[in-house]
Amino acid sequence: MTTQEREIINAAITALQQIVGLPARLAPVRADLERDLEDATIEIEANRRKYRFAAEVKTVDRFETPAMVKAGVTDTRRPPLLIAPYITREVAGRCRELHLPFIDTAGNAYLEGPGLFIYVVGQPRPDQLKQDRFRALNPAGLQVVFALLCQPELMRANYRKIAAAAKVALGTLGPVMKDLEGRGLIRLNPATNRQLLDPPRMLQEWVTYYPTTLRPKLNPRRFHADPERLQLATIKKCGAYWGGEGAAERLTQFLKPEHFTIYARGPIAELVAANRMRADRNGNVEVLEAFWDFETRADDLVPPVLVYADLLATNDGRNAEAARMIYEQRIEPTFRQNK
Image (cartoon, rainbow, N blue to C red; front, side, top):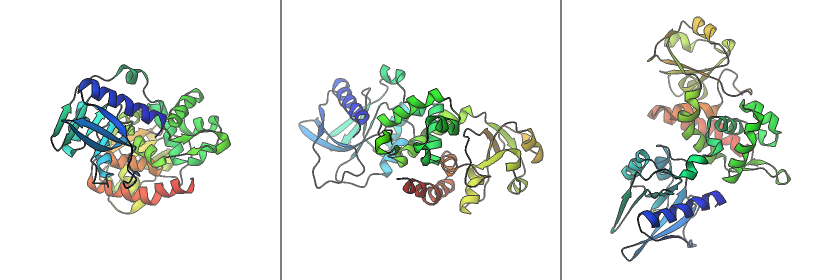
């Protein structure tokens, strides 16, 4: 565990004792139990009985997190336990639907087992979380993480080059990198080779926060255009790149796009005119501003990490399958090459 994760666990255990009145502790791990997917074993005492949970610490509190944790459970000998800085009412309800126990640092909790049922929601977010939001999860931080995920070799570059690739101010970079280091996601010590330590976890966190934190700030505009005309369009000459379903079709040949996502650098008048787009708030085309400054391997497509995020944000089964293919074929190999 990182220091940050241990602090979250200790704060959640303390809150559980104060709000619910149940004693809990970090328990020793038995040698015969797998520990690959959890961060700690938590023992909770209730009704003169001890309940053991395989705990996983997550620093995100979005709606998608419980399903991700639940899907990762392989050891059925102990129920999983999600431990988070804060769980909203919406996420708490989702955990209950999935039968995924959780505790947080505010005292919100859902615990279920033989002879045990606890459900506490609505405790206010602790003041320290309001004041100390993770820097890598604000819009500029997400731009930095995106650049590092797309080009892991940037970890060996100077800060000026990283900031330029991420299109953020140089002064923004230091606090973001320190945040990532503190949570065990990157190593900054030049003597031991600066590198990404847990790119899959970074990606999961980025994909969770991108749709609600960074994407709305990219000046999204909606249009309607003829799908067949769009599929034949060459948008790169207008300073634009395919994202979402349009990019997924080109990367996987798996699905026929129904909705089109385009990321543009600069004014879009030429793009709109060339493809006969008309403004329509419910249109089949969404145009957003490009937020990175580095070349992609396929020069008319956004980086695969962004295609992956766009697809997952739609909650469409076909798009989720295309996202899985893109992760396995385009993203995960890049992570392996840069270990």
